[in-house]
Image (cartoon, rainbow, N blue to C red; front, side):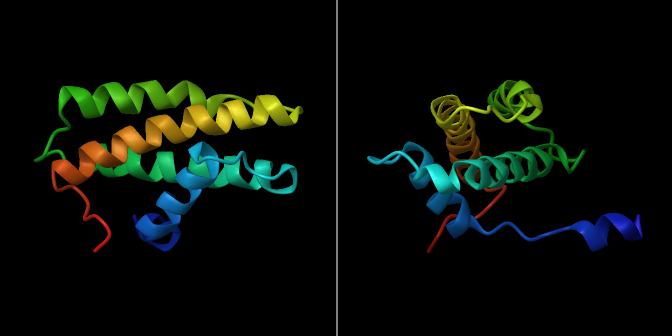
Length: 114
């Protein structure tokens, strides 16, 4: 149990939104940062998914469960070698992450940026 707390990192909501903007904003991410962006988006989605199912006394809604399940194959998908495929995966991760974060904010599981 103690090991789990040592590995825990607080959710940086601003970083999540910055990465969402980098993935699905008006400009595609630069080639040099695409793989790093994929790693961060995976980390954000995993962390949000963990928040969604963390407390048995507050079970996730059907929508939350659907979004977590939608994210599982994206988290497991290998990092593509090609830039366009990497950007495509980043965008798919970003859309699921954006939808999940919106639902979690509405349900007050997390706080939005003030």
